[in-house]
Length: 127
Image (cartoon, rainbow, N blue to C red; front, side, top):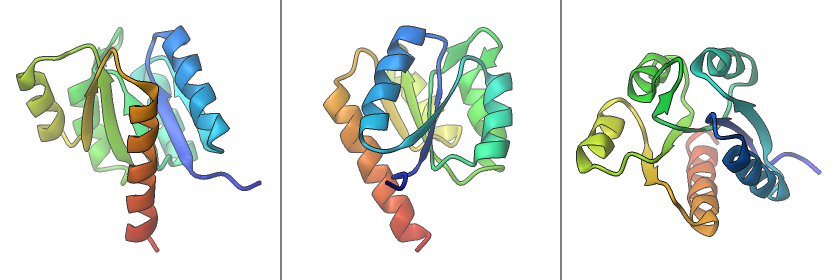
């Protein structure tokens, strides 16, 4: 069966990443994972993901700055999935080029619905 699309998960929380990866793979997405922004850069260049789901803070940098950096290099839909719950952080996420901001803890069905909606929009935009 063909892939439903390609998704990159960027987060150092291996348990959460595994949980999200499994849920996405059940929906037939091809899923790549990165534990830091350095590794994510390589995957973005090689795999050209449709959607990037990323934490805002990792040991090697700031997610908002990373989003600004990659926004000019990718047309991927960018989700922030983070513990940062302050409204100012959400504003920074959107101002840095993010398309969605979802805080942890989150409900997996909501994340899956948002991914599907974003993938649908990408298919329509690039059809």
